[in-house]
Amino acid sequence: KARVVVIEGEPGTGKSRLAYQLLHRCAADGWSVLETWGDSGSPVAPWHAVRQLLIGGLPDSAALSPSEIAARLDGDLAAADLDARHALRTILGLPVEAATWRDAEAGYRQRIVRDVAARLILARCSPRPGIVLVDDAHWLDAESRGVLNHLVEPMAGRAMLLLLTCRPSRGGVGIEPAHEVAGEVVGAGEAAAAADRPGHRRGVERQRLLDL
Image (cartoon, rainbow, N blue to C red; front, side, top):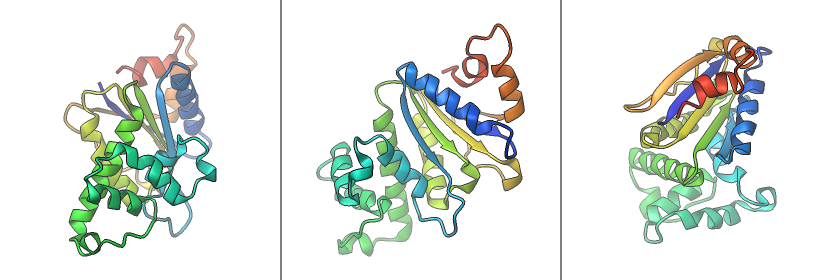
């Protein structure tokens, strides 16, 4: 089953270290791995965190232009779905010249962008189990937070973990579990202690986070 797990802790409590340890173990076990982070800079570009999720696993992504990245990702979208392609260009910060897209109601464009982003993230995780790590989720831009909330429901029925780290003093992450998707908040200190407990080969990762 799918799960949403939040590791909470103030700076220095080891939440990111624990999350990345789990990420690396999942990768070693053959999971699909996607990672991103919240940006503390101001202002934060819209879709920043989601853009990193989509780009990060592409071969030689650092050497690709946004247009080349769009061409790579287009393969996961239906050829006839022009609005989906416009939505992808929006996520990547590319201009969209089509008047039908520019003139569409803002709420419609937002729904399409969220749907396309969620579909692409799920496609990157299939058919293997998948883990999506969002570090420093308290810094998420509003657009990326909306996508992650939209992602939770279609995660249902998949072997998939959405793992977020955050500082509770920053107001949490704003990601809500959906029907048939379990959710849990774990304190960084509690999680680290469980992970180090003698006799638990995978510690908290196996006992609480990877019970899919």
